[in-house]
Amino acid sequence: MAKINEEQVRHVAHLARLAVTDEEVQQFTVQLEKILGFAEQLNELDTTGIEPTTHVLDLKNVLRKDEVRPSLPRTEVERLAPDWEDGQVRVPAVFE
Image (tube, rainbow, N blue to C red):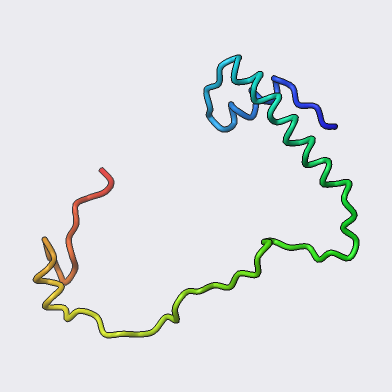
């Protein structure tokens, strides 16, 4: 079984920019060891003849077709826009 030590937990926490207490490091070490132990049990299963999958359900994309439809007339957009300049909607600067 893969052994996780506190140094590894601290390293992963550092990479994830997480501040962890000594108590949390001990707790996470135990939890991660249990998780990896379970994952190792899965390696013992005979998967001969089983197709690899990326998802357990056979999902299909259910987005609607992209169809060209009429949009608002330019005069209406100009009327609704809070500020208009040179044929474009003017918005406050995002970057300074």
